[in-house]
Image 1 (cartoon, helix red, strand yellow):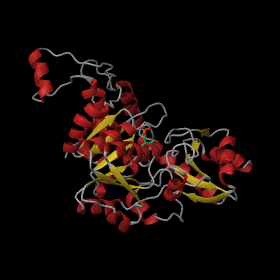
Image 2 (cartoon, helix red, strand yellow):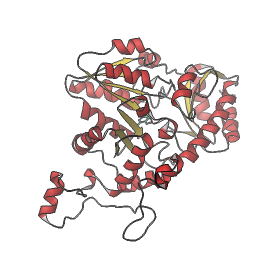
Image 3 (cartoon, helix red, strand yellow):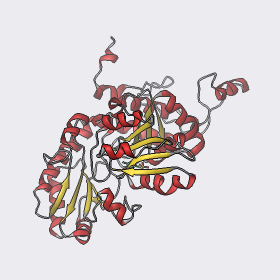
Image 4 (cartoon, helix red, strand yellow):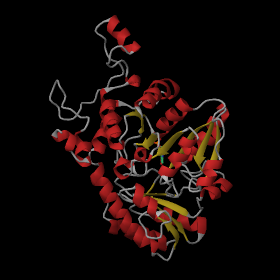
Length: 396
Ligand SMILES: Cc1ncc(COP(=O)(O)O)c(C=O)c1O
């Protein structure tokens, strides 16, 4: 076994897939900011298009900056392959359109990122794809939702924004009994905290906009799974159906971000634990969800599936919608902004922001309260995050 084969994850995340530039010796893969690649001959161009010969053609079909991050992400997820996309939604749409078509059916969790919900509920519906939304913690309800034309079981764990944690292994087994593909959005965890493929799912989605990049300056996504599925997503979902190609510069930034992922995730989670414990005892907090708190309902699953409890916290403010809005308006250091996984602490109001595609009854069904705030705890000193939230809560 070589030294490389024995390397631990944190080392592999830094070294895997990146090789010094053969022309200049540049340690980091240079940015190949080009739309097209020149062929030596018409015959070479023909061979590349027909797949007889490996090589670059056109950046929508692949670029060296994509290859580095796709190989890193696949290694981290324990997947055969991964493909990057120009956003998390681009990755989701490319995977869904590759799998689904007119007359097909999806079983999905009732609590999904608002745009994923809207894609299934409002957009794909127009093209004859139907979705049944179920509570993925109720395995009997999941089982009962399948139809002969079901092609996909899809959920997030933890779910955005409730942080509900589901039994990935049990859900994968149910999906496979019904002979459908099972996909999980692993954005909240990253493969550093959770590797759903190890629990039997078929593919994993990431919004790399979040922790994977980590610096709040890129929109990007990934799909990871078997080589056969990823080849199909690349050739159909990305290339033809969505054209959701990641720019080379964005890919370079993702490579830069991924190298510090373990370091950042350890600190994100440690900070979130301190902030969550403080909020749990705050007199203005009606209820709180953080997978690292002892009262969290699925603690056994958190321990089984996740290395650490993540850095998202949701809490309901006493006093309802107006009180929650007052807290959001009163933060001074934390940013009142959607997204998550940045170095800065971000706070937002899901019911009126990220999840506004849910109608009021659907919000209630999904467990998204009007007084709920979602905090993505950043890398500041947690005492400063607490001081800011305390002064904001005092104004509610
Ligand atoms: C869980 C989850 N999945 C997917 C997405 C979509 O990612 P993007 O904004 O990169 O398209 C988001 C965005 O917030 C998200 O929170």
